[in-house]
Image (cartoon, rainbow, N blue to C red; front, side):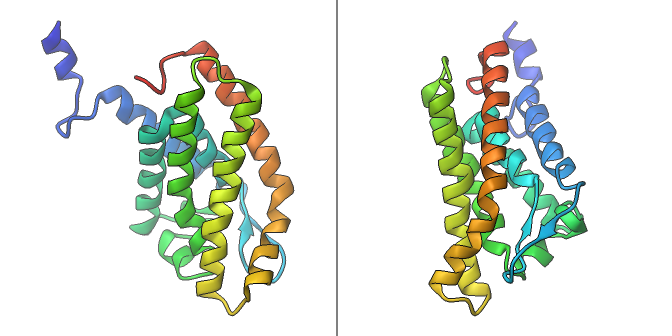
Length: 194
């Protein structure tokens, strides 16, 4: 039986099941870019649905696989695939004001995934909301604000207040991700540990 399990691992030592989950969530993040983006305010940073995929990757897959899914997605955009909302590539986004937000996706997924693993197997809704909000809003906004300071001539105050336009939508994403993660962890209680 041990030989059968080993045959299901890839050449780089990642089980096929993990690779499939990582690929599915990278594709989910890409698909969430299809509705496009809405640019609000003067910062030039678009509102997208793709951060929902980032939050879901961490909340459903955990720190290791969730971060890997986000990293695979970002790697695909860096090689020129127009997978970011509005048909942008990673190189285009990194050259603009949204660079920090994009970079913040990786630590956000890691943070959410690591803390989600700690609140399992029950996955209390309130703790799930707090974890997803801290990672999906606070961490991404922190990196985004730093990116705005480096990529634009905004001061600290305007760079911070730029984030206010994103809060209502991001709160909805946090709630949706929490409800979905609760359902997944109830139905498939070993996803993060697997």
